[in-house]
Image (cartoon, rainbow, N blue to C red; front, side, top):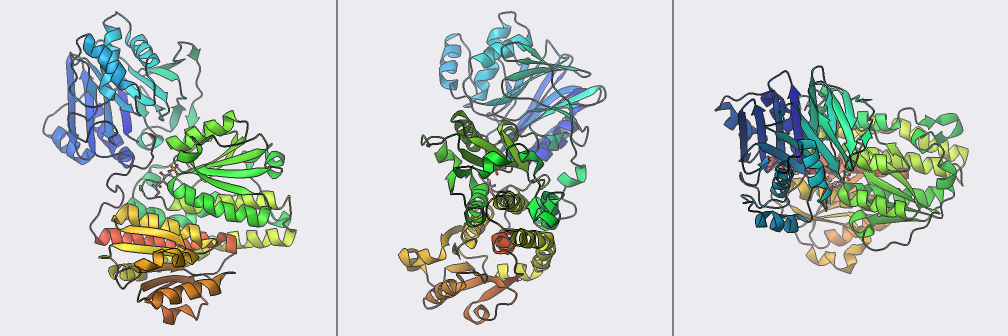
Length: 610
Ligand code: AGP
């Protein structure tokens, strides 16, 4: 949820920390700060607000150092404020700590420390850890051991960086439940929440696992478990380019990522289609195919947009692979004592691979013996590494908080998984080849829709001041209705609800009047006639209607106020196309409302706390 960055080396760390925090701001951005140690000088600069405000503050005071840490926050304990911003310090300001996660037993730890005379300045759980480490330093432990002892008392999650005036040659980092990566440079080393903050400097990275703690020097690092056993970590090569995490000339990351979808969908397909056999080839599932194909049941668990993708996956797998599917909110799944057996396969979908509820649901399913598959975007993420097997969606870094290209890449991968299973069960070769033919054309069809961007922007003008929306769809387009509503809600702050179109009659139709725009996703599928009736029901009550229809459609245009046309495709791939106009509609409405599209209020890109 928060962005963490640290530097130790030959260069001035301050600009490196600021630049790193800017690349992590999508993880949280309600307050920010840095702490540096330069020989005898220990300085902390922190502020409420965005990293740019921190940068302005720093520009007024010339500070530099070869050792420093930085943090951009998404508040969990204690409101966004300068006092609650990180880094947090010990009493004599010789130790700085930044933290991503939640210390669940912080109140009991705080009480014990207060009894020892520690005085707290902030309302945060993190400050408790700074004083707890100080408590062990006073017992003459080294910084490494003091951090290790302190963390052994902590319940909850953490990704932390610690620097200390009396040991200015190192950064101590540790993780449990929140991601942490070490970047290996030339006579300099970096630490961060994720590789986006590192790849401008190095592509050699080390992923810390839960329960690991490391001492990072400028020219080396050592790693141990939290119980003090030495471990050797592998150095990975990251293949993300810096251009992939910059805006590329677009006004917002979100628009760049919407426009990137032909490429991201192509990348999620690349090397995975075998036309002459009508099958998909998924290396990440090698050795597990038989178990998946013979699953008694497939569950799919996720949150938010990824949960909407899961709903599409349910339609795909049940219709074409003939295996019962259940879709579960991860936050419910992890606590409702689900009945799971080793004959079940559970798919966990997560763009970040770090969503706390989804990771916890995965651990729950694993404990019960199910085969757990991860469908993630971030390589080396916790969910990806915790899964038994999985399929990366290869959508590239998604910086905008509102998920767009990851969603269509998730749908593409779910189609590939469906194809793999279905061709081993009841899908014929011609049927499999038909799916592959459509997948090979899907990126061109996405291009056709994206060319309507300006047209959709004009439509958005008509809806900027609306206060409520209904999104309606049937079949494969029902989850698209939910996703379209979420996109609008989370970046324009307009209330929007998605429903199965037939559900209108069971209550929501009472809402319809000329102030309530209704978005219908009405492509020509097996329930097309039914949705036409739903459109007429809304029309009869003076509802304003925007319809997403196929290019060939000649019926609906005269019934509605606005229409956006999408090419036809295989019915299980329809959501990949019908969601795109809804992404653009939400984007343009939010921009016209002057809102921060890439960093909507109250949200964070990766919800790594409950
Ligand atoms: C989607 O636009 C939101 N950002 C949010 O619902 C997101 O999909 C959800 O938090 C799940 O994230 P994940 O895919 O990284 O697990």
